Image (cartoon, rainbow, N blue to C red):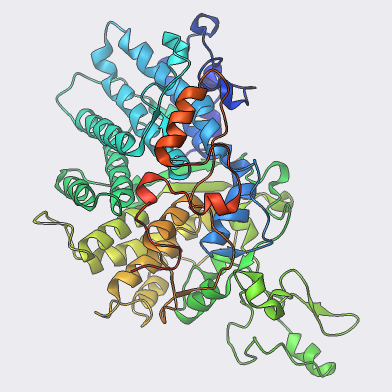
Length: 562
């Protein structure tokens, strides 16, 4: 796979830089197209694709690590307050993703040979939905049907579309894209070529992505409209091409120059993040190959026993000295629930005046930030995975949602494929990053052993929970999708003997906030707040944890899955 950075420069011609105010999203953004050079339409896609990934540089710090991944209990870290640095997904959508996509369609529509550009145009809708879902996940109603009209129609006050309308619109746009992209009877089509940094204009892979996005929508609809969820699932099953069906059709982004977490890739900015007790316990007892990929070893390696014996020191009671994986330890997701263990998060266990050991395992920092401390690894991101697709299929089949459609395998079959792909994909990310890997060679020995582990195999008792937990573990690098998963399902479930969510006394926001956009669009914003029952401008946790977006209203509390 080629690096993406070399395809981005031309796309910068329509980049919208230097605009930060929400009130300017729809009025002041490039309202005079005549001032912008008209590049080849093929090169406009790269910039939007790149920004879907790289805008997250600060999101990794302020939102994913400090908030969402703590709420899902993938990591434990200092419980920082939520600040205005979250929700960069929103401005990014209107400033850096949508404008070029609209411009592509505008230019295509004006071409005398536009029939040759149909597939180029339809790809843009798939990207709009990909990031649009992420925006509505935390904001509910958002401008969409009238978005970006300030540039072309002097419409600076777009309505905020409610989620039912958004999902219907997105499903229709995905269906239209699938119809065109899979149509082999069209005139010879112009290709983006290498300017398409996700799929290099492999139209069939775009169809597969569109179908997987339909599964994402179906999952979000389940608690609000189960019948529609099932109908969408069955549509995907009946599509001749179907969703993402292998690691080669995942969305991949490889960049040899990009550094997440800002300049230098300082993943420890503000604080270091560590394994939770729950995720570490399960990874260890199931002998998960992803354990060294996800977390670093503590200091209980090498000759540590000699040091303990020399100074007649005993390890703290929460550590089993006979544990063969003693070098991996987790800490409480909520520090207040176990302050004794939490005291060792970021603080060494003192053996002598010369020696102290860090006991709690940090996240594998190079896995997330491959250029940390001048390292030379490369950032590989897979924002839409084959594993995610497999676990949707396994979940919905297990729930009986397929009707009479051909599922091309049982729930267990798709479950195994999802696990296999997750391990392989995480290993590929680790290899690119120059990080600790899950295996060398093909990994089939390790993967097959894991599939046959008693903690992993279907047992006929809690099969759905096993699907849920493997989906959850596979989303370690997808903070938003993991949060949406835990919010919609209530898993991991508090009190479960299989994989229990830890007690978490903090209030967890069910949404973020959109502040007053100013006079230009205040009326529509007020209407959207009233329609959703949101307190305008509220940023306090009691409000954000009690007011829900539409598709979340019937979902369980975190940890209260059925």
